[in-house]
Amino acid sequence: MFDTGKDITESENTAEGTTSQQLFHHLFEACNILRGPINQDEFKSYVTPILFFKRISDVYDEEFEEAMEFSGGDTEYAEAEDMHSFVIPEGCHWNDVHEVSENVGKAIVNAMTGIEKANPDTLSGVFSSFDDATWTDKNKLTDERLKNLIEHMSQIKAGNKNYSADVMGDSYEFLIKKFADMSKKNAGEFYTPRPIIKLMVQLLNPRPGETVYDPACGTGGMLIEAVHHMKNDRLAYGRIFGQENNLSTSAIARMNLYLHGAKDVQIRQGDTLRNPLFLEKGKLRSFDCVLANPPFGMEKWGAKQFESDRYGRNIWGCPNDSSADYAWLQHMIKSMNPKTGRCAVVLPQGVLFHSGKEGMIREQLIKSDKLEAVITLASGVFYSTGVSACILFLNNKKQHHHKGRICLIDGSKIYTPKRAQNILEPKDVDALYKLYTDDTDVVEKCKIVTIADVQAGGYELSVNKYIEKKRQETVSPAVVRTRYYAALKAVCDAEDKMNRLLIEGGYVNE
Image (cartoon, rainbow, N blue to C red):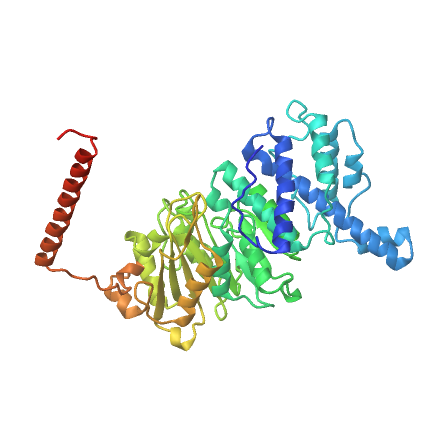
């Protein structure tokens, strides 16, 4: 049996948190059924679509029952497409696959394909994106093993009445984290710790009716937190946007957002730096809130094309092809609404002090007066990577008292150490956010600098360069010498006493 993750800490003390963990454990048991013929890093390609298939079927059944009750038992009325969030064609429901005993893999594929084709606008690609899943390969997955998987998943109801969107979504977030833990492949890109996301969303403070965009959305965690911040308000419907290059990850994002109850979300698949997909009249679309954790130091990202970018994203220059960090940042700045736009982005701390092209771009960024805060994070808080990261917060409409100033926060000592890794707990997030909102100098933790200060510092943003340090106690050489000889005498006296006691006790000869 695999370790099912005893380190999950989110909502541990609430009934909903317990339910989320119970559901997570049930989902992870599905991985154990696949263990053997399926590699650990392939689990997500099977468990994710099978969970979504079950969820869709259960929600459909709930809607059918509600329509039957409302219509007084009118089956035709209850089966009408208008009564359902999506269409499940005949023979493609979970119960249809549950009844199959032979060629189970083929039945699963047919059902998933049928649902995709019947819902081209909303569900296209959500199952077929997992093209490494070989459901019909009986040498890999026997009918018996697939029947066990279907039977196991049939033991739970996954509809809206059975689990709230938060419970379903949280358990799935736990599963995503576990997949990242098992695969160890690009885990930092695959999973961003939720406390860091929460801090970024607090800085942005998206309000109902505002648009939110993540150009490197991964599995959708940041967009989900933004929707939660807006209390799942109906005004958020149709105003959540994300782009993700990896095909199966973009499918997971769509499922993840749906499982969390987000409505009418636009997730598109493609290379954001080479081919941004959110456009208006041939120009880059702008948003009220832009946030992302793009892949750190991405190489061969398309610098040559970016140098003459048709969308004008090379605002202050083009970084080298060895690192896309400042390309991502400039894409996000260009995506900010000129009047209301705010941006929160996680980047490696090297962007704060690197010279060369990055230094030239950073100088222009500082002079633009869009940068409102820099928060450095403790090493080890990012999943499965030792890279030290920071959060940059930008604002196109700084309040008067923020203009010409940047809040520099050193969060390197604000964390909670755990056995596996350092983490940010809610109290740590609150402490970092309070430093920003208090907007005042704090020794060892925070410094409010002017653009002139940073100019004098060579346009570097390394926070420790500016933050005031505690005065170190100075001790004169004479005092140090006296303390040393006193300590040496104490050691010699103790040694003499030990030897005397050993001799008196007959343990050693004189």
